[in-house]
Image (cartoon, rainbow, N blue to C red; front, side):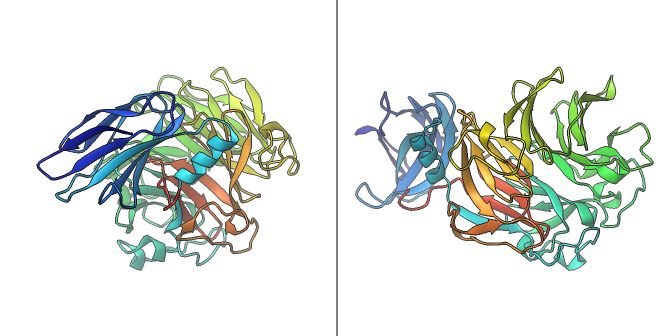
Length: 436
């Protein structure tokens, strides 16, 4: 049903088609700059903008947006060509159809960085010739975490090259912090590429491109501002002259009033007034965590084979895993599933979350009803696994990733994986394949 149409001097024509929803999906505004707003979207859902050269021509997906409320907005490219656009809204609630709708909204799997040259721990494979060149030609050195800013630049904690690397939106790689020689040569403030890091294995990125680094063997958390200046934000232990044992994962609030990081069997909390204290203890080997809007944390305990929700008072409950490496399966309740080495965690705007396994080398989606769905299959250990580039990501018959390190989502909804001892950063694009 054609429910709205605009024509601008730029010869861009917009046509809105109603999708299957309780109330007709419709626009509330669309201007010459491409700012588009709508109402009556499915919740939870995904709104897709599609383009075509004519109303009877093939439609192509331009972009997706998660809908957590019935109203929303996005920005679409407006050019001088005659163009038709339409909206689709699909349900992604925790049902079989909701899961199908979710995976159809995602598309290609691709490698963003890493050439897979080697996997030896403690060895840096960085070479100066990689600087400013294609990121997929650069050898990474056991990267542990990858996350993007709002502009789409991806930052990598490349542990064994003692650096933070940045992949720009053109696919080129740059040293963002560190000298590639492990050690300590000052607190800063100083140019980030002139200060040493020592086995950094976690980072957190603000939307504006400010990067926080868990400088593990220097037992410090560093801040790299948007001008490329680095300085110590706080000590991760009372004596920073010795390494932080088992440091893993980092989160810093935008106003720097609160931070969390992993410390082997402890989840640690920092505030400017209170310093570093333990929020929760007694874990076996912490993986990554995710701070929910409520302030509670989703926490992976890799060697206990559990995922917990840790509350702000330090208490916790198990939300996934049966305490072993086997049992359950695809489409089964999360509490009955054996999860082999849970490590990466990231919330999805559906009420569910992504779970990346280290030893099990798999990416799972846990929906809002706590049902687990396998997204990407792989193999752990020393075996070299790297498959599926340029193909639709969802193919459970093929091993495509190695041991999982971290998972995150960028502001556009793309999924970013840091995986394999051989060092790969992968991306699953939040864009429908033709026919989906």
